[in-house]
Length: 234
Image (cartoon, rainbow, N blue to C red; front, side):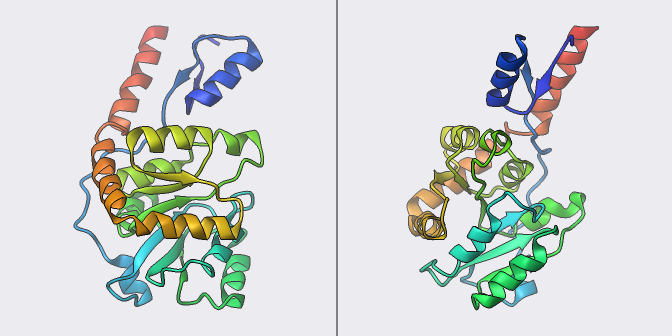
């Protein structure tokens, strides 16, 4: 190939090593920068939540291999009663996750919202207080992941709580937009969630930093890189 493009530096390095090539280009799955709405209270209104409730958002496909069952179980152990988990999306696991939440008597802590059109997604995303990505390194795809939701959270101005995986750690820590940690078990996830919201000073800093990060981690910048790759081929 005359040019090879992938979504982050770790995967680029693996492609270069595996296929004996050089110069794999990286284009992030970044979102376009859109004007953020006044903090909407969509989830509070839809689920009848009190004003002081804080929304931790998991969005995207509810499918296997994403540690979602453990995330739901963790909400039973979260000590801060003001924290609620909203799972925004559809998928093969939705019914089993709903059943798990019901069995654990989490109807007032875990809420399910159907998928929304992509064009409307960030308006919903911005209604949360933080985004969560609990993926585990069950395969190389997960280990090196930078999922779309990572950039959707940034575009919507949400601080991020993520598993400590190489690329997510690099982006979250370098930009100072959240916290990464061990999320292998329900107990560890619950501890991470409580700690994330308990440090109000850090939370405020992350919120401020992500509003800056969204200005440069965006498709307006990544798209220019893509155009340059094609121009070089011409």
